[in-house]
Image (cartoon, rainbow, N blue to C red; front, side):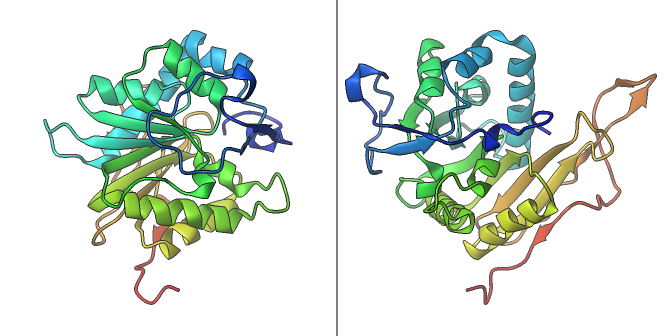
Length: 275
């Protein structure tokens, strides 16, 4: 999991930040903001935590590798620059990998401190301050694909009475479905707390119109195990296989695709008849 003991998404109560108020944060909204100018975000991602994403080489390496895997699962046309969305972009580490691979991207995040860190790093993507639980504010068909690294599980926690996880998840997934070009994919790396939380997330994705499933990499490794929710916005497609580690003396070697079914894979049903 993301951390031992107390999970960061349990670290509320949230702060309330009004962008631009008192000059506390620089403007990071390159695109027009359509949300109310009041956001709740967990105190966990403050300036101190944002700084780790600029200095900690291990954290940078992990984020970059997860972004690489998410991009691989998107199955974009080879050699063709695409316009991508990065949900929960944070300090822009995953976006940097997208840029290195020749793609253009827009990042959205709820933490001003994380977006300030992205600006300090001169990241190439456009940045937007926003709450994914209030929806993705883009025109229909805007993006060729979407990635998200370690963000979606935050929507499963209610920091105040008005935060209904199922409602916020559906608002996110339905607006994301609209923002994607038909046939595009979204690959969302996440750390589900338990099977019930994963089922809640996949149920709301299905309700919003997506098909797809959960890809589990390294299912037998406590440290390397990763969950990727692979969503299709067009006709149903085959869910990619998870990676399975090859070990020699305890050291991980080059990853290979497994031909075995992974017991934790959840396949989303067709949306026909889903209300």
